Amino acid sequence: MKSIRELIVDYRNEVLKGNLAPQRAAEILTEMSALLGNLNDEITQKDMAYNCVLLECYKSEASANRAKIVAGTTDAYKEMRDARNTKRSGN
Image 1 (cartoon, rainbow, N blue to C red):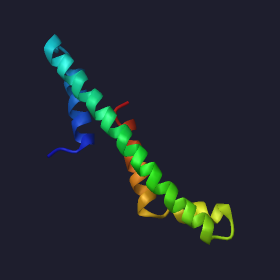
Image 2: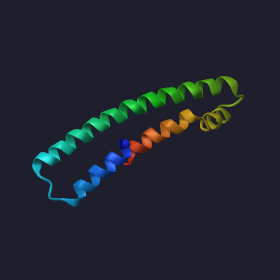
Image 3: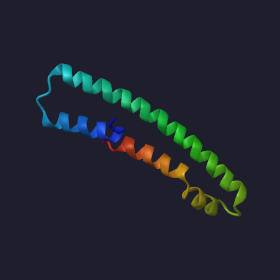
């Protein structure tokens, strides 16, 4: 199964080649719209998970700056950034 990033790249390459039939263009638009909705849901989930980690870091660290640095080293932060970067890769 292809990743979302791979699907986006495949669709983008197909569109850039040109000469799309209207039916195929409509199919790509439908698929890309569905992917965007799924990405937005994923980003929301990852943002919430990271914010929970960040809140815990605020509670355990002496300063807000240190808490943000510590939270930025977690898997939750990486997953949040990956989700956001996947959405941006379609631009």
